[in-house]
Image 1 (cartoon, rainbow, N blue to C red):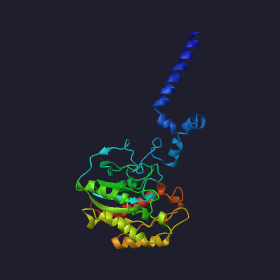
Image 2: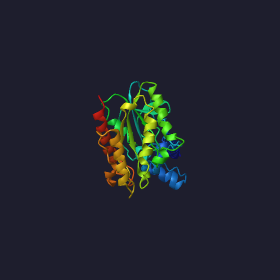
Image 3: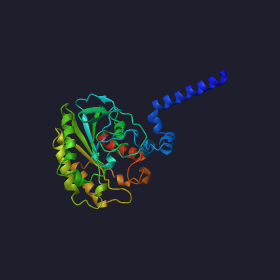
Image 4: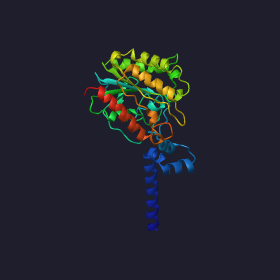
Length: 301
């Protein structure tokens, strides 16, 4: 009798311990393969946390409700620096948080968002999407330089016309960010533009639209005469690409700075992409390396 009571007590204690353990580790459990089987397949709770994790979402248990990534609970808030250079990375999805990588890029640089500064990490604040971006990978390759502030503002599927629309939401976001940064004497140095997939076959006014966007944003900078444009030749997605649009992107690059070698991301095949369109870790490494090489030549240490 005493033996059965001991066994019963062990079972009850073990069950309670298991319940407590599961509650404490609920987030990790939900996002595991076992959790997917338990919560989604057996219990029908449809948390989809595991599926989001496999897809490359950095915080799969958090569904970001903002158009721009705005979840800051896992971000380290810091004081915005003074007298630092600013890099804008913008465009559409391949400039945003739609890239797939599980690598964590250590860097000392800064991500500006909503009048605050944070240590730069994936997903980058202010860009659309919940996965990875090019910014932390690029930042990790610039660690020999003093702190750099990154404004990441790309939007998925954004055509050049929609970026240059009459309500100027996209343009004004970047202008307001620069105004806040200039309060501490931080100045725009590089404007990186990775965009074009949405304009394949429809690029008649691409140069005009781009110049409107660029001039509207850069003309508000105190350092406008010294801003360096890095525009990539980017049009390829799935089976579509546009050589005429690439030619226009090259012309734009040459008109702003003929000494910058333009980066042609369309040359990167599907081994650099996870869905025949957006870049994987190999693609991120390649593009961030190419970008860093250009920036290193133009930045004094």
